[in-house]
Each structure stands twice: as structure tokens, then as C-alpha cells.
Amino acid sequence: MTPQAPARTYRRLSVEERRSQLLDAALSLFAHRAPEDVSLDDVAEAAGVSRPLVYRYFPGGKQQLYEAALRSAAEALRGCFDEPREGPPLPRLARALDRYLAFVDEHDAGFSALLQGGSVVETSRTTAIVDGVRRAAAEHIYRHLGVDDPGPRLRMTVRMWITAVEAASLMWLDEEKQPPAGELRDWLVDQFLAVLSVTAARDAQAAAVVADLAAADG
Amino acid sequence: MTPQAPARTYRRLSVEERRSQLLDAALSLFAHRAPEDVSLDDVAEAAGVSRPLVYRYFPGGKQQLYEAALRSAAEALRGCFDEPREGPPLPRLARALDRYLAFVDEHDAGFSALLQGGSVVETSRTTAIVDGVRRAAAEHIYRHLGVDDPGPRLRMTVRMWITAVEAASLMWLDEEKQPPAGELRDWLVDQFLAVLSVTAARDAQAAAVVADLAAADG
Image 1 (tube, each protein chain N blue to C red):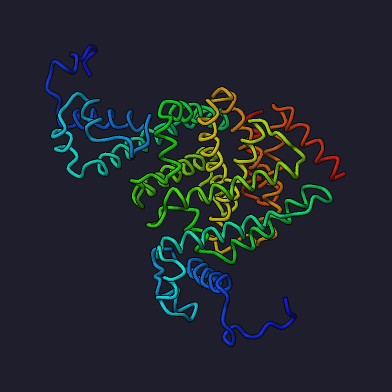
Image 2 (cartoon, chains in turn blue, cyan):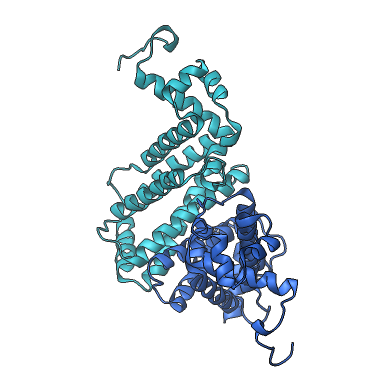
């Protein structure tokens, strides 16, 4: 909270600060390598601490550290979706996508490893964390669309689009981040409106949402 | 090949027949329960054979049997995509989707377990089998669209749609197979055209494909 905090190395970290320093180090390692290629020694080295200290904070070892890092990444991802309910909804979606793509860009290989699963440390718990982020994304979208009780077709449409966005992110990383993030974002927003419009042709709730979007945009 | 084959119980099965009988039994068990809830005893019982016989065919035990069943399901799924290159392309896509949804319908819980991963027997090999099916689906689509060398935007569009179809299938199973398969199929075809049209606004190859589709439909 002080304008200029003293450099970290010159003071003792609190438990919370130390924990978050270790998670940051772990996340940035998982971001560049698959979880199975990251050792606790690597994390200790990256954080500039001893291996026993890492174990003191994460007695469950790598699996616990990985899950904690995943939870912390999931929280950061949820943070991307936070967007004030002001102005027309589609630009809000665009801004949330900007933050999401910046996250994907920054976390890179770790993001792929996370979503593609198949990792040695994949468990039903890690799957649940990722699914939780997907659900949170869908809830945010309903809220911004002003829908309290989404019906099955609207839900299916939104979840399909979210899955498609994930697939696009993974391919984007594979394609050396082409097209540029801004273009990808516009493309994804246009796809959102397009699939919603297809659903609107067979669902009254989606039709009302599309009409609202058109009115807000006009 | 004979019009009326003698009942199976009255003759000795060939190695190939026995193997395929065991795979059928395993697939139908995996279709209704998660892989971790299926034992080799269950498979032996369902096929009406002894446990040692199952082991003779699948000495690697459950993991090997699961992978073989998965491969056999993957082959059946690829079969769904086989469609003659005759008539306008969108109805071809609709027919392939009909077969795909019939497969999803029939294999139900096994299909979910397969795609949702997180199973105890999930490995990089099983992930590769599923990815192979996705790739095959994309190749079929390019071929039917008359595209020899799909560029990055067209590829991204097609892969996103395939992922969205998978998500839709899983939700469809969760939603007690609502809407009816025929409606879901039309909805998915309309979505395909919609996302392709969005891409057409920023990609010449996709624009040519959409123009061809409109001409074929007209």
C-alpha cells in the first residue's frame, strides 16, 4: 500500500507473500514447460529459496504445488472476465477477450498443457478447476446479456462458443499467435453474434438477446 | 457372407471374430459406464467367455482392452464421416452429422467418458486416438468443401466448429438428448455456415467456399 515498497530481498516475507512468490515462480515455469518437466528444485531455484522451504509451504509436493498454481491461474482467468456492466455488451465482451488473450499470450505453454490435459498430473480435481473457469465465463456472459435464467438452447450456444474460443486459443499458440490478438478478438466477437443469431431463429430467449444487442449497438 | 450365418454359439469363432466379439462387449460396457467402473470380469461375463480368454486376447489387461475398444470406436466414428462427394455439400454435412449423432446416442456414457478425459486410464495414447478422429473430421470437411490446401483462418474456423460440435454432443447427452437429433443437426449445420460466413468477411479462401456453397444450394 506504500507508494514505494522496499525491495523484496531486503525484508522478510510474510507467509502469504512467500506463498504467492512460490506460486508465481511455479506458474511462470508451468507457463513455459509441461508440468511433468518442472521439478520442485526448478521452482526453488526460480524463487531463489531452498527446496525444503518449498516443501514447507507445499508438503504435498509437486502435485499440490501444481494444483495451487492452477487454482491461482484459474483465479487470474476469472479476473479477466470482470467487466463493469456499462455501455453496449459486445464491446464489453471484446474487452474481456482482450484480457483473456493477454493471459493466454503470457502463459503460453502452461495454458496449452492445462487445457489439453493428458498431463501426468491431470486428475479429476484439476479438471474440476478448469471446468469451474468455463462455468464462470458462461455465468458472466449471461449476466452481461441481462439473462437471469438461460434456457437450454442459449446455454448450449454460449458453452459451444466458449469451447470454440478455447480451441481458437490453443491453435493461436500453435500458429505463432497469428492473426494478431486484436483481429482474433474481433473475429471471436463476430462469431459470438453469428451463432447467437442462428439460435435466435429457433429460440425466443436468444431472439430477445439478439434484439437487445442490436438496439444497444445502434 | 452367407445369407444366414449359423448362430455364434454353435461354432468356433476365428481369432478375428473372437477379438471383435470381445471388443463389442467392451464397447457396450464402456458405453454405459465410465472406464474405471468396468472390470475384465464384466467384459468376460458380457461376452460369455472366461476371464483367462479375455487375457489371452488382451494380455495387457484393461488398459489394452480399453485402448483397443477406443480405437475400434474411433474407427466407427471415422466411418460416420464417409459420405459420397455428390450433391450440394451442406446436405452431405447434415448426413454425416446424422450418423455422428446416432453414434453419440448409442454410445452415450462411454462417449462422454472418452471426450471428457480425466479418466483413470487416460493416457497420451488415448488422447492421440481422439485427436486423430478430430483431424480426420477436419480433413473430410476440407475435401467436401473442395479445398486442397486450407489456410490458417479456414482451419481455425473448421476446428473451432468441430470442437463446438463435441461440446454440443456432451451437453446434449446431459440434457436428455434435447433438442431431438434432427433439430440439433440442422442447428449445427446452420452454425457451420454462420461461422464460415464470419470468416469469409476476412479471408478470401473462406469467401470462395461460402460463394460455392451458396451456388450449390441455389
